[in-house]
Image (cartoon, rainbow, N blue to C red; front, side):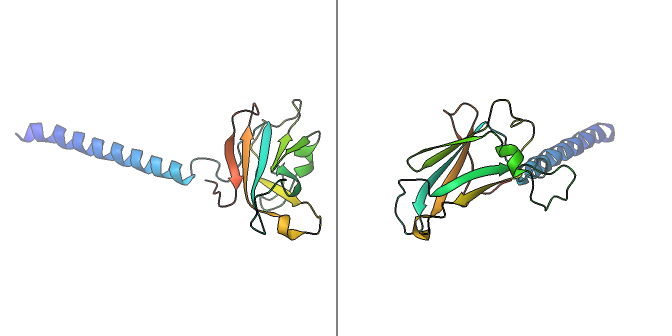
Length: 157
């Protein structure tokens, strides 16, 4: 009876350890510790949609002058701002209603590495009431199917 009990105990321990590893691995993945947390997935198209202005109205225009993406500086400390102009070189913006779409040029290096952040510049029209306070940023590679990548109350993991 003692001889049969040892393999069962070892099997039970192995199953327990395997389950613990799977649970810890899933938890770490969920927390973003196994991924590059805080980085934006690179897309060719990005769309900013203004959902509400500061005065509470539904916008008829984006309410921003432009928006863009920032790449990490390869040799700089991670806390420094960097390389927004390199990403935006050759980019075009189109506006339709409350949406502004950023198209990165085909020959650019837009898919080589993830972006660290995105930024927006308000319209500077002197009327802060029309600034967007609720908005959504989406990304796409074909400009037809969009995935959310940022916005108000959007958390990166």
